[in-house]
Length: 290
Image 1 (cartoon, rainbow, N blue to C red):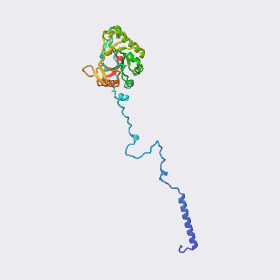
Image 2 (cartoon, rainbow, N blue to C red):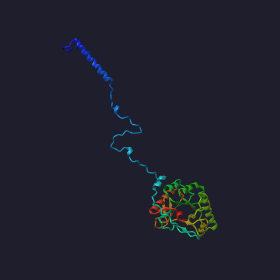
Image 3 (cartoon, rainbow, N blue to C red):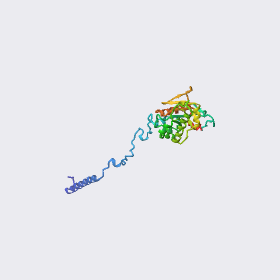
Image 4 (cartoon, rainbow, N blue to C red):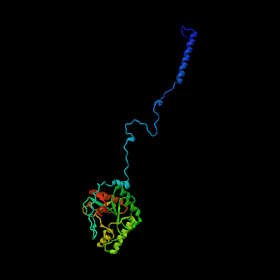
């Protein structure tokens, strides 16, 4: 088998080679086999995504965007309300201690302010009005008919809490011009008494229904606690401002009139925009008539 080697030695050599081969195979079988997964990191937690190389920005790094509010929603109305400069410290208009109380279409002030008023209360009461007034910081004066105020006192009290002031617009909303003193006094004082009971404050301003009045109206209003009778400079209806003067712009001291109607949210927004375009700031009537 092997030249120059005896048969016995050859068998020993062959046996040793065979044994060595068996030991080598046994060692190979016992050695652990390393796969790639044994040297990789532990699997990521589901809440911590594994970073992946990418040339595009990570979704988590992208700036967050908020969908614009739906038109007609409360958030939309608030987003559309203009930003005003702070109103100047009010300078109250002078009032006479005796005699007839004033009747004003426009307050006699040079300050850059205008006034928003809302009348009646019986026709419609859009539910988001109080929140709009609160969130947009709208100063409003409400001239209410006392039966509507009594029937819907919770609604008007919410506006009062938001900063609105309740004033007098008679009991039955009938024209007062030409009526007797007793009739007019009953309409004005009757409403003032009821509104004071409901809202805890005596009305100090009066607006006659339809703006119709006479000297008797001024006397009866004074006797019922009013300090002034208010007309208006502009009206607002269905989101449109209607000017009563040829200037077609809101003037300092102007009084804007709207009503508790279905489009009141649009009317408030239109009034705010008109006041803003004129370079004025909304203010509260009661801060100027004391």
